[in-house]
Length: 149
Image (cartoon, rainbow, N blue to C red; front, side):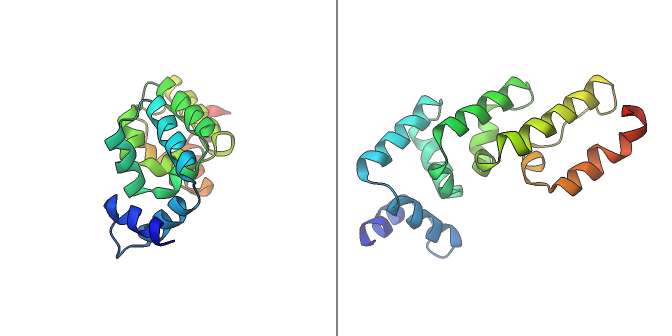
């Protein structure tokens, strides 16, 4: 545990936040070899070493997310043409959302609304992943129910 705390301190996570506790938990859950493999996996996703550290400081539990899931989210979001890798790095908790339950349905709804000229601008990535279903439906489905049929 002491080693995990020291490593998190070295990585620059503020000790006076809840994030520090999550960071210690994340570090403690990996063996050294597994940690290095995870960091290499993020590099393979196109994330630099400094960006991996930035992601970790902002949302340490993202490191515990499977690389397959991170790859799928990256592929899905970048394919929309609305988001860039920088969006994922600046708000790394977006990598923890469900692909099938959150991203795919919401992205499909936004694509349909845009294709029918009902919206001209997509919401920020943080809104797509963090809003509750009720809020998302209230903003992007109910107002257009008549036009969508």
